[in-house]
Amino acid sequence: MIPLRKLGLYGGSFDPVHNGHLILAREALESLGLDRVLFIPAGISPHKLARPPVDPRMRCEMLAASVEGEPGFGWDDCEIRREGPSFAIDTVREMRGRFPSAEIYYFIGEDNIPSLHTWKDIAALRELATFVVFSRGGIPVDHGFRVISRRVDISSTDVRNRIASGMSVRYLVPEAACAIISQHRLYRND
Image 1 (cartoon, rainbow, N blue to C red):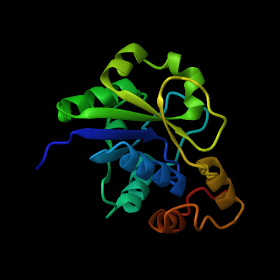
Image 2: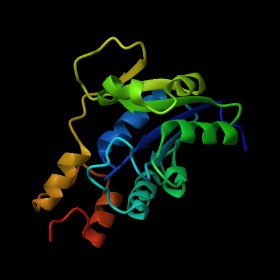
Image 3: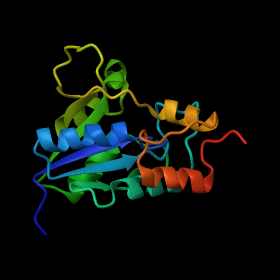
Image 4: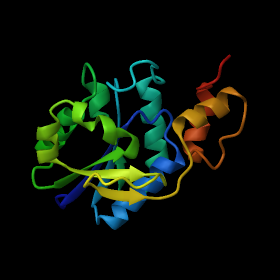
């Protein structure tokens, strides 16, 4: 197995994973010349404690089905297996241990920039990984990080609300994830 030179880590709730996640990850993979992008669903997001996500196994199942067969994409359940809140620093340290020679890129949404200074061990995190900001077409902000920008108007909140209202999410969510959502009746109010 050839060692990874450049690894992208894409953490988040992925509740559910949607095509916007995949579009931005593909853009990052290609524009940064990454060998691999790992999607890492949060076990307990320290920034989203008010609304518990769907069961972690279901989110992993949706992610696995959505990236299956996609060149350069994979997923990892390290944050689901880890007890307590899912902190980026713990994940990056674990990945640094697994892939010691890889340059690690950590993807964050543009909406995380204002609170980035509150992240656990942010100074160490910035030393261990290169931050890449995903912008979905917002107003550019000078924050000094590399930006991957694509106009993508899809959000997990909107997807959940559409499903709860009985509306279609076709073309918003990968077909494989749609099948799992339907089979397990996820995000419905009934």
